[in-house]
Image (cartoon, rainbow, N blue to C red; front, side):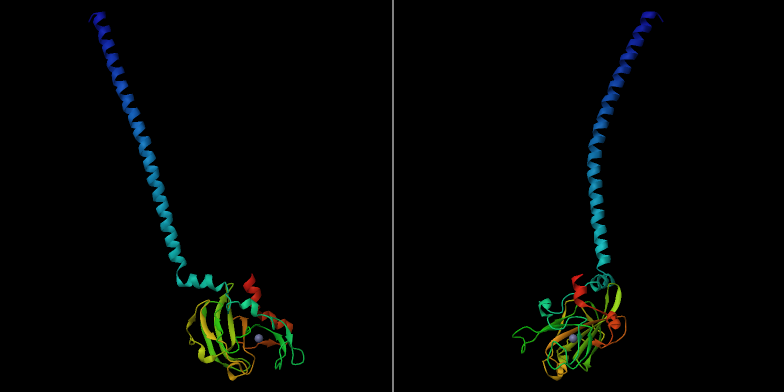
Length: 243
Ligand SMILES: [Zn+2]
């Protein structure tokens, strides 16, 4: 093959290669653009998938949170008020006050000792109207009975700050209690009205609510204790509510 012919062939081959390369570059460029576009699209899809996953996860968490046990736990760590405007009603016997028949903020005192509950008084005009009482926590009814010194009593088992307690609602109208022993009483649920003042319903006490929170799992109806040390077996509702 003569030199000219070889050179011509080489040139032709070079141009062909350039042409091919050019074509490859165009293709590569196109592929690059396409992949950019695809990656942009796919990233949106991935983001959506992640978002959907998160929503599903939240749903699943909600499902778990909505299980009865969890709801109980969450609710039982908090307390709610036993009456609307309950805070206005604590005016006579707060938690821990020492009373005796000779030295009491109420007339005709029968008891003496440190008050291990909070008394919620009635407001003006409520002497002869129903005053509803609400559950402060979520838990089962343990006792529904007449108890000396209180009249109608409902004792409820609750868990407060992860510890078992017995909540005593005293001076209730026994016949007004809408729950039976073993029933679950939901937090904030209205379940009774106050007993009539100076009648058997309140065991001849003034019309008011005595609310006691006894630590532990024992039944203890006492509204007063005789030594300061024993006060720590009860919880001050107001302190619990405000914290
Ligand atoms: Zn009391």
